[in-house]
View (cartoon, each protein chain N blue to C red):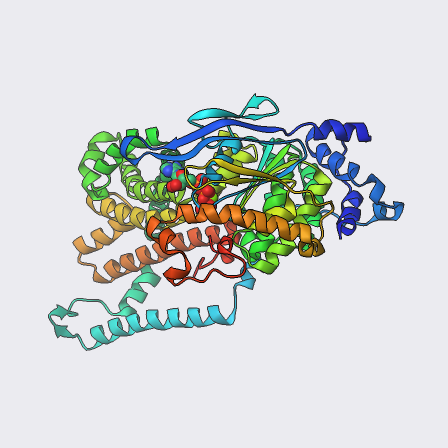
Length: 292
Length: 330
Ligand SMILES: Nc1ncnc2c1ncn2[C@@H]1O[C@H](COP(=O)(O)OP(=O)(O)OP(=O)(O)O)[C@@H](O)[C@H]1O
Ligand SMILES: [Mg+2]
């Protein structure tokens, strides 16, 4: 293969969300989940979406994935409107979503099987991907025999098996402990650098979003809008040491400020007025961003 | 840090890119990104041979079953023997001393009389033919119930409209016990055999249907969404996700259905039958042949046990993952 081919590949996977609005329910129990959001992910770019709980992040991702139809606006992939789920968009869910009745390898093979790829090729591809995730020795285990971190790594490579143009990730490391999370982030950057596909990554962890992303969208409290768009100028490949650099710290501070406002706005007015410390809660050195 | 993982992926013998576009893209992207980063040594990295596809051999099945013999299971088996032994002891003492305290053991045959009955009648053609006929009826009714109940349950569970259409009928029919179908069944079907199989079918059908529906409903929605994202068409979704995902509940339904099928069958045989274990038992009563009554009852118990045992066994072989499921199979 040539570099030219690679470039052609990376020109695909352009996500364009235009003036999107989503309203759930009708009349009395109407909930405006997302309000007039426009965002994009350039081909090969890693973009994070960060915002307070309930601001419509998952809803937005479900629209790009094709599970939910927007009330207003549209979502496009490479210029074509997204109408239904498909294997051109890999999705990694917050909940563990491996099929418990399939072995680890069969899970990774699933997308290829659906695409009608023959057994021996599926096998080779799945084993290569499992090796990449560092889990080749677990290929014949069942998902229930694995730890949470392992399951999510398999979830990621399973989504990559069909060579999607974009990867959509909804707080994939949300259920993991801090140490595992840091390791997973490094693994994810590695994988992403090799595949160079567009990623839309949802998180509520500020450091995580900076460490991983080229660009970060900050959303407001519900109804979710885009509050800010922040470029992350840190060089690649990113390393764990970078998190101690002043550039990184500054970005953390900037994002914390933005998010603090929003998470306060998301809370009930009486708490907001009294302030969190007046409510008996400590605002730790890491700020309120740590607790939502 | 980046370069170690980098070196790894290039080495992987990915699929031929000309022949197949889907996995080829994996390779293209993966290795293209690394071209500069890797030396020639890395490309030789060995990867273990793919494992052979396991074939079902009889020895393997036996080895698997032998694996189930553990201390835990020996204890289980001993307790089972003790409980059955206690039942027999009660029966033995009751008949030996002809106990009379509200329940009367006066006419109840002793275990020994029943044993004698078994040795006389037990191997006679009449007895064995009755068993064979009952088993055939069960198998027919149960298999038809499974063949209709499982697919219908999957579809009802999956589609709201299908549910709206079928459930009212199901809800009306379900409370009618299979025995209440006996007169109708005799009118409905051209011969006795068909009507008994039909009653057996009715008994097995509803537990199977309802458990299958429940299985579909209890399936985690994220699995369905994950399958959709991975490109599963509707039919593949059914075969590869909804069916295996509901399988534990389906097997619950099969086990319950098998029990109800026996109940229904015996009742039907007693009322309308010629032949069958139920008929054998009822006939013994009419002929005042007390030991034969008990023999018939024990036969029914053993046959029912064997049938549900087979279902359990098939379930274990078919759903090996349940051994690891949290709280599964325990
Ligand atoms: N199917 C639905 N029907 C009605 N309301 C819904 C539905 N899905 C989401 N909502 C509402 O839309 C809002 C946004 O939900 P969403 O799950 O997108 O939030 P989120 O940003 O992902 O939150 P979190 O960070 O807690 O996961 C919430 O207020 C939620 O109650
Ligand atoms: Mg969410």
